[in-house]
Length: 473
Ligand code: HEM
Image (tube, rainbow, N blue to C red):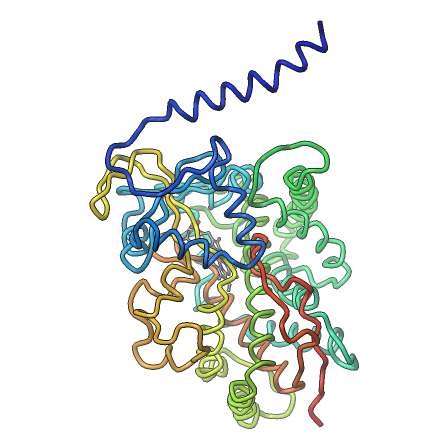
């Protein structure tokens, strides 16, 4: 009897899910597309396209087959409209809190709990303002000398004297050390080796089904998130004492800032909110730039004329400085060509495939009706490789960013509108400071010149991108 019940349960569950799938409110005149299989929709096709490095094709095929402005799919159990091109980006970025609001798949919701990404409306505005009082250029400019020191220590420790380096795992040590230092004042190099495996497990379970059973990616990620939060909790406890006893300053890092500053309503974030936001910042603040630096190292190895121009710019900046003098914000402002190169890397190899919104009501878009509750997706690739927006889009051409730069809403590696990435300035500074030191000390060759990159869920080289180093003499 017990066995019969056990066998019947999955079948009943499947029937219930099928029923729910077909009873979903049908929208007349919705965008064309395919909902794929019941329940799972096109999730597996989407995830495997991302992991095989064919996501651009997945999106472009559907834009051609259905409609290049918007098409329907179904992802992680929800009907979803994918908004394409500049018009799609503009619509989603400028309709926050009107027709749409930010939304993330439930794996992200569960892992990042009460952090900013799961807040909407006024609560989100207040949390963003609070974080931006630390992450804005006026404050971050003071941290450039610190970033400079961290970059030099990193290169001396992990690159100097080596013939070969695996870029993706090595640059993580830099981006993570920087995030730990600026967000938590942790300077201990032993700390990051303990944390990197936890962040790896966390990242791998971030986008996918939320089946919390031992062995699943999501289960591993939940465990890792809890372990990281426990560590952050200990740091918060100690910091409270240090602030009380004036051993720590309220502006020394983002943790002190969050503990000491109320939002515009006079409310302080709770300890749980601080833990969740620090987890978000540590993850968003180091894995994205790590991906960018890995792609950058690949392009600089493949394109010697670009490498030479970056090197010339960086040497010129060094020449104007005294021996051993740290980089300052003003120096970073002079790295115009290097930033155009990094921007072109972010166009061709954006670390993030896009982000999500949810329809707050029924509305019309491009002659179709989008139903309330539908999930909406914008993607970096639908505009970044459009030949009408970027001539010869496959070619690496940093000059696209000279003058007025790309057309509005066509270049979106950081998203746009009121939910645009909060870390753009942080990322710009850390990428440029790293570029300054790495090109000045080395040239390098790719061990596997044809190594592929895949999204899992962020863009990464499939074999970690080993390079052969040639130090300048
Ligand atoms: C190259 C590096 C980076 C890229 C490409 C990137 C990209 C993105 C994208 C695409 C979004 C979603 C925007 C949207 O929903 O429209 C986002 C959100 C976010 N990013 Fe970044 N990011 C980068 C670096 C950083 C850094 C360094 C930090 C922290 C210091 C950071 C913190 C955040 C936060 C907190 C959000 C959520 C904003 C919100 O929900 O309102 N990011 N980022």
